[in-house]
Image 1 (cartoon, rainbow, N blue to C red):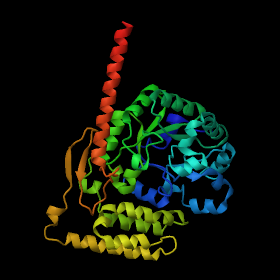
Image 2: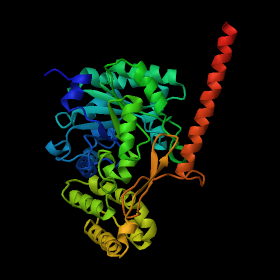
Image 3: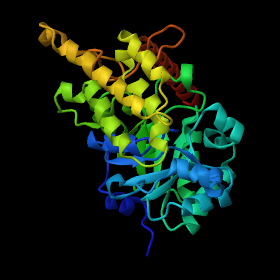
Image 4: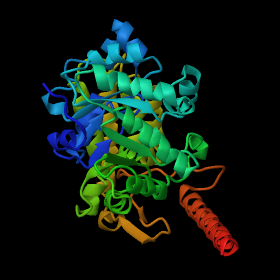
Length: 403
């Protein structure tokens, strides 16, 4: 059978536009199933370590079950991190027939990736990046794709992206942040460089954008501003799986109640084999319930103490406690006034923040050095504008000199 490529591959999986990002111990089967229910049209698995997946049966058993890549889990892209082409191919062969493509992670900026010599730290070794992609392109039965980060220099980023495509990547996902932008230094993803790449790469490139997705309307903005084929969400999806709904959906559907989401997620995990979904559950609970737990600290302590992998039955009591507490909120006489979502004024980055009741799923604005995410985003945009103005002035001066 001929291996599908590029546009043909994209069309074969119904040209999905809303994508669950690959996340370590976070985009596992149960979460993918929940996200698909709320509008995701393509999912990536968590990043898995190619060497361990290839050589250790226990690791493979923990990370992969018989339902992964099944009929209800498609379309699906399986992601590996790797720095050895042979181990990568060996690992990828285990998932042939259970996925639509295999993706290589060139974007993980975490310390563990630096120590292991993979992810975004392969940006320093282009020959190895090429070898990893080309190994799968020439020897694996399913297509290979790649996820990268950007450099500060847009021209260097373009050359890097071209090399990745030349090596054989059929989809290119670009996270609009540099390798250094992580944790407290996350900052705003750069859609301008994503648009620059889109405009300067071959027109038939299947191009996915990643970064800055807070609400469903941001997906539409990104599709239009970047002119990408699809939009990938990581953190936005973790705090609110309904981020993939259409922007025309009622606001209360875009921000579902935390008790409803938690119950749905719990029931899905309960029916998932293997350990991966149970291992990920505690982290998901903290994110789904984040604003709720800030108010109901007793339930927060319950979540902190539970171990779904070793005592899954204990999770039921937490789900019930959340349901009971939300039921108390909706029993209030003034619930009509309390349960309101307010959309603020349009911000410099193009979107508008929302004020959402704490018992509804909502994005998280990470504070940096005591500065809220809202202010940090605005300040960075102002700084970007100053930088562009300075570059424009410099270009004018250079033009005058040449004349």
